[in-house]
Image (cartoon, rainbow, N blue to C red):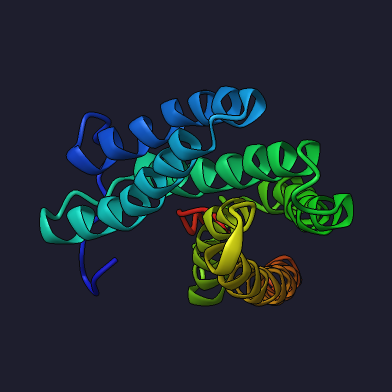
Length: 201
C-alpha cells in the first residue's frame, strides 16, 4: 500500500475479482495434478503466479486497496501453496517433509490469530520477506513439476526449482519468526489496541 493511501471496505473491486479468480483456480489445479495433466497444471500455476502479481499492481494503480483484498490475497497464496504441495507430494515429485515444514509455519501463524484478537488486533500486515518467500515458492512449484520432463529441460528445472524452494522455505520461516516477534511486541505493550489490517503472508 502506498503511503497515505486509504483502505476501503469495498468488495467488488478489480483486484478482489482477480484474487477470487485465483481462488477458483485452486480446485482446477488440484484435479489436473491428480489426473496427471501436467501441461494444463503448469498453465494454471503460471496464471496463478501472474494474477498474484497483477492484483497487487492493480490495487495500487487503481487505488482500490481494500480490507477484503488484504485478506483474500494471502489466503489465496496459502491455499495454492498448500494444494500444490499436497498434489506434488502425492505424485512423489516433492518429499513429504517439504509439505510438513511449510504447513508447520502456517500453523504457527494461525496460533497467533487468537492471541492478537484477544488484545484487539487484527491480522498482521504482510511483510516484504513474507511476500518474497511466497513468490519464491510459487515460482518453485511450476519448475519442480517441469522437472519431470526428460532431458536437459527437466534437469535445469530441477536445479532451479529446488533453489527457489530452499529460498522460499527460508524466507517463509524468517517472516514467520518476524510475525511472532511482532505479536509479542504488540501484546506486551502497556496499552492501546487496534486493527493493523492486512494479513501475514
